[in-house]
Image 1 (cartoon, rainbow, N blue to C red):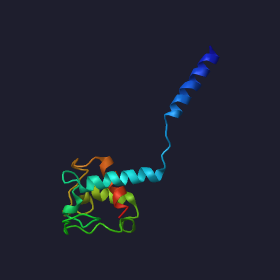
Image 2: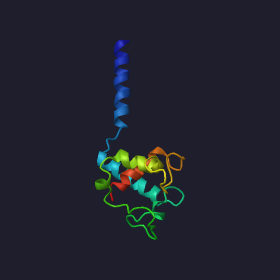
Image 3: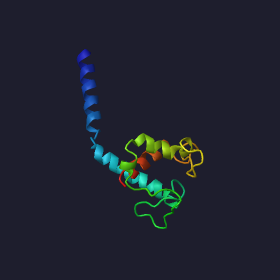
Image 4: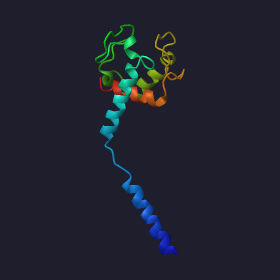
Length: 120
């Protein structure tokens, strides 16, 4: 009985491992950045280009600062994420909507936007 259980566990483990595909961290980050760009450019979601000059956005606004050299400007991703989540925490007079606080964007969408902004 013990042999049978051991064999069964080995078989199930092998099946699970065969179904698992290793993905390089770079591919995951690239995919997240692509998803983040889609949200940033989505007029019903991030709509970042309404206020910011960024990447290849057309008719970009100039109310907010240009979104460029983001890694240099925000070496800590958590600070950038906090800014997108609720800019009013750092500056109560900020015109930037608190995307996370008001549930406009999900945590995953904000994380993806951060990954995208790090490509700029």
